[in-house]
Length: 247
Image (cartoon, rainbow, N blue to C red; front, side):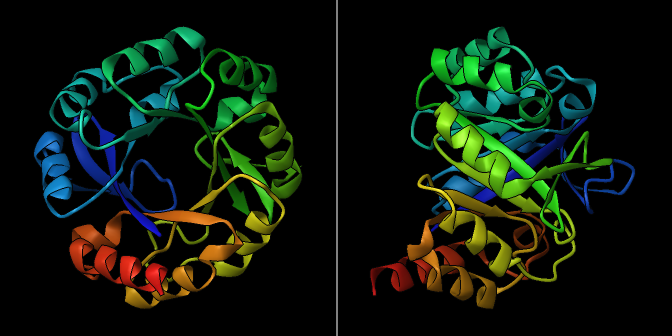
């Protein structure tokens, strides 16, 4: 079970949002590069970046700090990034900078053809991010809940060639009230590609619960607010996950 620290970027700073609300941001650091180095030192084996400004603008908005993070940690810690990725040129630019995986979310739902083209052009490097509320896919920074069932959409995108699905329960994200294990397992069981859980990880019991269902196809979990506010010590949590996974 891989625990993946998240660095959410807004105006060049490391922040966390509650339920995706841009005006409800807590700034944790004005030096995201330093934060990335910290998580690497704590034993992180992958890093999750989100360009929040880019997600709302529809194009990259934190490019300088993303470039700096990749220059510092990209050679020895795979980095995945989402937010503002709407065309193949942007993907190519990020991959050339050293990014391991791009994450396509809203654009995949609105323009499935783009996701299909991205998977064809960059095989093995495209992850789809699906955010859902009560099993239905949400888009546009969670402002709109569609009539698309998350499992049906994930199966469709799996056929396109995405390498994994990041699944976020938007009712849990940033709220520190636990991962939606049942919904995550249900999605993982419906797919042949791995699922990465996102949203709500708040304590070691959540880590234990995820490890208990790892064999269902859950590759890892993205963690944010909990490791910044200290309810989880990252190194301890990853050590626990490694121990449980080995059993």
